[in-house]
Image 1 (cartoon, one colour):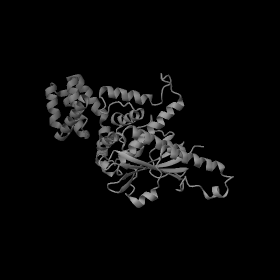
Image 2 (cartoon, helix red, strand yellow):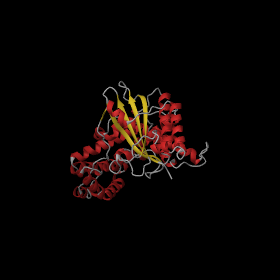
Image 3 (cartoon, rainbow, N blue to C red):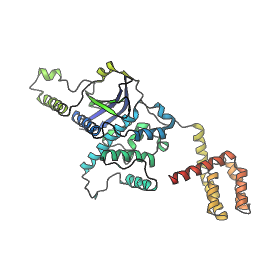
Image 4 (spheres, one colour):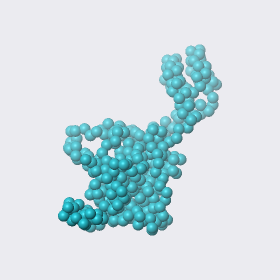
Length: 379
């Protein structure tokens, strides 16, 4: 039976004295205290390797660009917690590849091969702003963020997925959940065996620099894993295995210099900000939704007219006409253009008629759309 756990990542800002819950997720499988300490050592090692500063700005910039006004509703220091979650997901994926026995030549195709192929094609057309990384886990995190930029932008998924589920989707081939660290829930699941709290102290001068890390290992009811239970003390012979497990955990803690603390203790020293985890997602605008539905209804009629324009006046005029006609959400306006596509003497006469019959606001919107497309191709 798999061991399941709930993770909370807290960020502490010593200059303001605030303690904030920045990220939380569920781990299905391998959620043992031993593995939680291994994950601590993973973070500890990566921080030492990179002078205590991970490139959290990659994710922070992505969130600001893609979330827009929703960014202000994120928990404090969410980018740090979410980046560390992506790093943990990268480690999960690396371990899973080793379990699957993928060889160096790649004779067995990885399950996310189609995503990698699409990402490579997109990057070849428009290079990514984050350069390739020599650190294999950071290279995987770079891939997650590139997936959001090129293949799975928030604007395409924010109405269907909450923010945590979207972050999870960036890290896996499909939306179907798998073993490992799973973001999406914001309350602990009923079936957990353990709860782990990670604490990250950030530098007052650099909010993306992590100066100190500590962990709290809890049973599902919140009691300390490292505290010897009363029945183990009362019946030492019957609980030899449990005592051995505790001794091994304590030996690992000593060996790696792992910081141990508790949320209860830290709440006496720092002020905890209110928890702000919820199903953060885009809220559909009724007017925009209704307009999108009208445009969808007129899509086939628009295609038919553009096809006729292409035959009469050529591909360039057809492309110009399509950009404008795809903005039309009024059937009567589109119907009023049907006869001129046949009766216009030439392309100039047709384009003049098009500009006369279509409201200026729609023509301006078409111009902005075409200009944005040109800029994207240049970039």
